[in-house]
Length: 252
Image 1 (cartoon, rainbow, N blue to C red):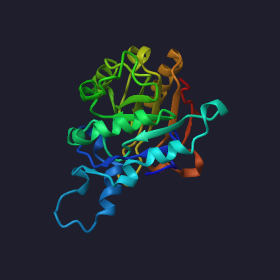
Image 2: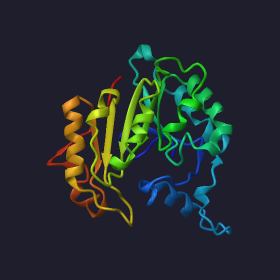
Image 3: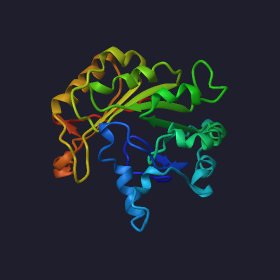
Image 4: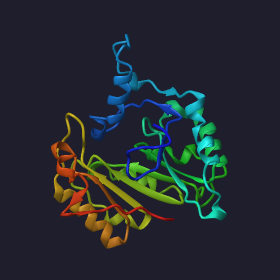
């Protein structure tokens, strides 16, 4: 986590806290859990360290303040830096309730950064927004939810209830058929990818094609991240779908 990242659809990752608990089938082979548990192999408790949320050290919690000071001024044509928030946790996890207000205040102090908040708990968003969120949300915060199959489309219904500058979907890992057309009027970006890691489940390319075609039909930016599985990095084709890349990013 930090000011640079290999995640293609963002510029930086910020983790004011780390750790999470699983809520659906997409969590089964969580990359963040693998990373955190690997860093805590000496844990004597007999449980996964990832399941205990921990606030990060001040240098990490306050990192966006340093990043913002180095951004070009808007009058100089500088770009707005995208920050994937809680890449190793869930911003709306209930265990993070004591720390969230301070995180919101930090976002408010750094308007030159665009915070991409992705959650599997969209039903908790509305009750945990800042009091001055307003009818259109804050201009530097995007809200998103993760879904894996049609079984979790209810998360989209929760997300679109909340005003936001931009709402987005992370369809990763894509584990089954998913039909997004009824919801894309209220969605500004869709990211799709197969599962990676040692126990990756296979993504049927027809599932990805359906999401792609839904996005094209509605004019929604579509970002295809990876095939996943054994094909993840084979011959450099991890980002190809039907022979071409899809790397669209919204510019709200």
